[in-house]
Length: 206
Image (cartoon, rainbow, N blue to C red; front, top):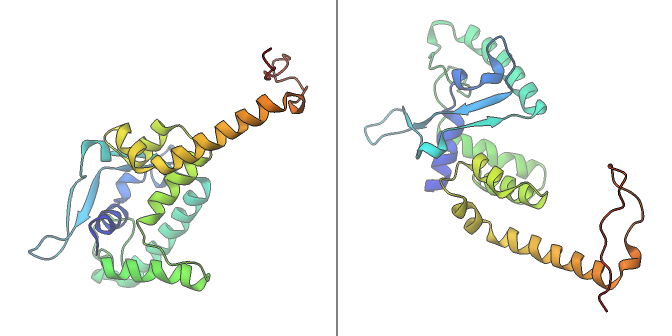
């Protein structure tokens, strides 16, 4: 397993129930607190350790669909715990095997790879979901600093460097839009904005 895949696995299966704020407590915060990762030391077994950097500790807002999925998973896990009885390993983890023990990295990878294969999609690595998320956010106009916080990067320069290809494509789209506006100002809409003022438009300079 590649280092980045190990990080993705550690963040996923190392998520403790106490870190999923949305699942517990009187208030529905709708967020997950990333505090620790699950790792396998050379001595064997599993252990929880601090995140890679202080910036990796972060609070992630969860979508309503994700919350619903977590609730369904919690109910399913409760049934598994009841069936396992005394054999259940109470590790306080959100994602476990049916007996409560942590999920093996190879098992997680195998189960993940099965989804795109069943959907007849191109195979991708688990860690690619992280890159796909960042790319989609940036293309939808989400600010770079927000994307940085979601990814847990220490500096905004890291995010800007890793996703420079996205930034350049957005710049090109912006310049193309500017060019069309400058060369065809008559196509600018005459509708007013929400404040009642006409929208800004370009005018040819004589």
